[in-house]
Every structure is written in structure tokens, then in C-alpha cells.
Image (tube, rainbow, N blue to C red; front, top):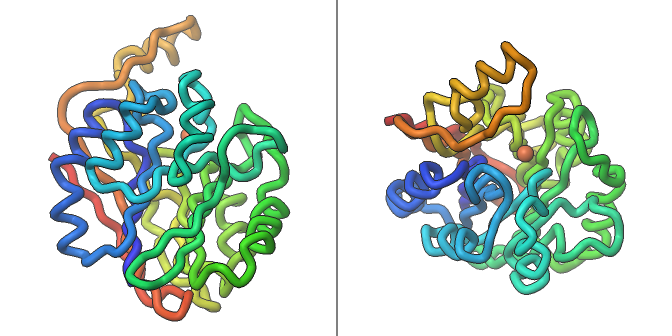
Length: 257
Ligand code: FE2
């Protein structure tokens, strides 16, 4: 069984890149499950019903989010309506939606989870380690494999999560930094790990946003309007081959126009 995870889809360029490449990628890697991080899919910030539908129509089986989950107010109702749209599971109790879903992938029940780190992030959620543990317990006996999108800034926190779940998850895949890391590997007890899958969207940008505006922001420290960049695009992803709940192989995918 193979899981394909596409890194942070950024705005319209990211969505078009996904639409154009995902069907062929899915075929080429014989993916049984496609997870897409869509927290930057709506003009760089958050998600809306139409953008969510677009990601699903492009081939996403599950859409995960992160610190921009609630940037668009429509996300509140959408999260309650769509069981395959996940927000970080470590939001304090009472948040709309859910952070995990059990999805069938080629006869394998995959518990897909989305959690968010607490190091160097502007939103302070509950402890992701304990929250992941509680989610595993809540779904005990109802899944064959675990896939975690860990949305975080700090490499240390993401590596720690990889080790925490080694042997218990098929994959711990980092998102959020928008820069793909070259550290993909299978940890000793069988969990595929990568610190960051990367970003799908504008290549000549600062993390997907207009580079000139970002340079001005750095130079002047004045408020700048952030817009999704235009021009060349890229797609970043990772594919994990899973057997008996653990990873057999992990491979990075980087497409740039
Ligand atoms: Fe993020």
C-alpha cells in the first residue's frame, strides 16, 4: 500500500500544479491514498469550501491543515461538515472539526492524523505528543496503519515526534516550512520520516509569497501586503510504501517547471 503526501499547496499556482500533476503522479507511484496539505490553498491563507472541493477534485483523498486553519471564516462550518478535512488535533477542546480520520486505502485502514507543533509558532496549541497519544488510544483497534502530518516550524520538535512514533506509525511527515528537506529515511523501528515535504506553488517566491514584497518587509519592517507569487511553479511531495503498518520505502518528489 502506498501513500502519497503533497506538501503545502499555496494559492492558485499550487492548485493548478496539483490538478495538472496529481493524476499522473498517483498512477506512476500506484498510490492508494493521497493526502494534501491545504492550509495555504486559499490565496495563501486558509481554506474555503470551493478551494476544498477543488483539492478533492484534483485527487486529494484527505486534506490537512495547520496554523492557517481558521484564517477564512468559512472553515468553521466546513470543518464540521467534511470528515476528510482535518485540522490539527491538538486544538483545545471545543474547536470545530476533527484532527483524524480512518480512511480505507487498498484494503488497509489508515488513521490519518494532523497535529501542530508548539515551538516557534504563533498559535499555542495543546501538547501535540499527548494529543497524538490520546488520538491513537481513541481509535485503538480500528486502524492498520498511522499517517501523521506534523505541521511545525522547529526541526527539533518534528524529529522528536518521528522518534516518539517510531514503530507505531507508518509515517511522520513534516509540513509548514515550505522548503523540502533531504532527510527522508525509515527510522529503526519502521516509521518513515521527513522533516518537511515542502511546498506546492510558486517557485520564485519567499515560501510561496511575492518575493519583492517580502524583501521590502525585511528591509523596512513595515506592514506589507502578502500576495501569492506568480511565475514558475513547483510540486513537492513524498511517497511512502507501507506493509503491515510500517514503512518499507520513502521517496521524495520534487517537480519544478
Ligand atoms: Fe503553516
